[in-house]
Length: 415
Image 1: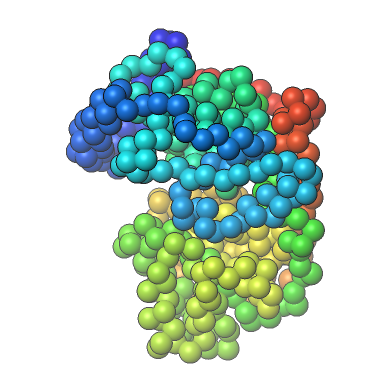
Image 2 (image 1 turned 90 degrees about the horizontal axis):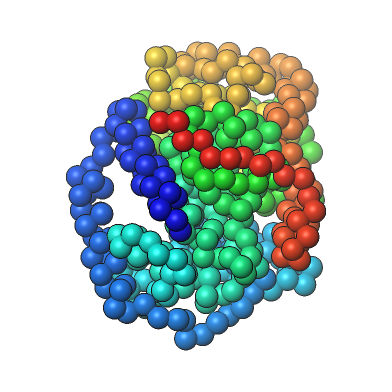
């Protein structure tokens, strides 16, 4: 890794800290001081213990999951099965926590000179490459500090493909990291977000693929207009914020005011669902579903989904279920980044407005089912055939053909 790239790498993370400060999020002391010091100590230990892996488990494709929780969701299983059906050797590994990396000595000397403070990170990436020698390594953690080192470490064995689990948005600094050989994006809306960003670190070839878990079985006929409504729960960290709890309060009030409707709750996979479990004890028409229940099962009897913010509304649209956005007046934390209001109705900010929107959608339900199809098309290049297309692309990369359309996106560092 040359000095110029190291300098840009450092500039990128400096910009991240500044961006968080400007957006109102104060960078904690632990992030500014403790974490860099900790990694410096890790690098000292790395200097003495790094060595080549004892065992090589060579494969065609390695899925390098960002966390055990992500891996345990098993949503990549249909793609993995399809790749194996096409004769590829596919293995999985998970990004380990630093202490576990040191304890197991998952460290191999990096092939290039890097500043000492990056020795630990770079040596871990070199170990992963040397342990598997993959033709393709697939990552899923947006903005990972490992990306640039991984991209260089894998040469000349193969390529890094970043396969994000959601469409690209504006509201996270981590979407400025694009230092991958290939970036598999859902569709044109994601591509536009990347191209329009003011900061892009690294370069990539964008490939429009659709979702990596939808195949011919991810399909449902439109439902009839019914009074079964489903709310997609939000990420646990957001559930802790008072402003988002107030949105939950508003939706709960709507359910209490309209006992002839059924409000189903699909919790975020990492949520404990405490709020809605408590609500269901006092309001009979609130039903909390299992967080790990398959989406097709959750939506089988549903006509309308509600969203505060979640990519799941795109999945629901692919399954012919239209959506409504829910927020509060003067709440700047919730932007319509998925353009729900463009395809459906304006957001509801009160129980009364939510009821009006639900009634309006049910009264003209076939139109909004049609809008759901247009919404899915806007975000997804491929739909029920996306796994087939992704498999084709990965086979092509593994065979060093790379004979599929891509869009080159270069670095943009105007800070």
